[in-house]
Image 1 (spheres, helix red, strand yellow):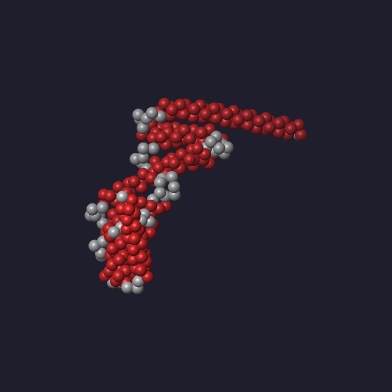
Image 2: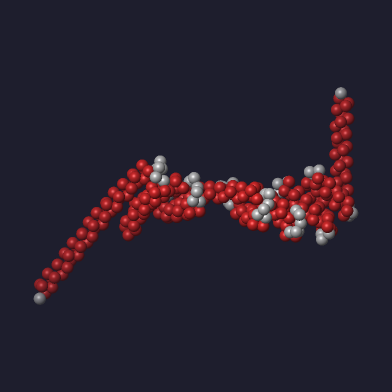
Length: 302
């Protein structure tokens, strides 16, 4: 039994050595037809790393020939199969630009977009490559509106849009967390702008009700902490945002909290108006006393 196992191991080892030796010889070969056939063979057998090495050798030689089209297509797919998505996207795009009348052109353009889609990161990372993927998918949809892959490509765009939405939501909430700092004024303003932009960019988002409530909440805090010249105007915004929210979400769980915020805003406004009136009255009184004193001095001088 042990001898049989040893024979099997030895046989596997000899096959592996023979295979490596055969590939090594191919790497040194200058026979492009042999290289081309071997590259296609390795590709069909799923040996994509070896296929890429041989395609790299043969493609410069066969460029412009009929054989180059299949080699270029397999070369792009080899990178895709190895999950080198940025490289495969570039090679599929180059294939499409070079062979746009090929029967494989539609698939190549889709695979360019699909490669970029697979390379797109999660929502919490930079989304530049996701935007590149959306652009590539849109180009595919525009050029092949009757494609069998149309629905699949549309689903990819929808998935990427969800990532953009979640990224925008997290950024908006980040500004909200920053309002807990020592100098929150700029962050309150940034919150208000971000919440409003989010609602415009993602009108159907599940986050809009929450952010609509946060907009009312933040606008009160912003008004309370504003300089006197801006205070009353910003407190009026609380009522404006609250009215918009109640019209849009008449059954919202936040309505009770919204009413409490409105009461605080109205109380803050009345207190400020009283303070402002008292200050203006004191100012007018001081000015009147100053004018009276001047008149009295003029009378004495005469």
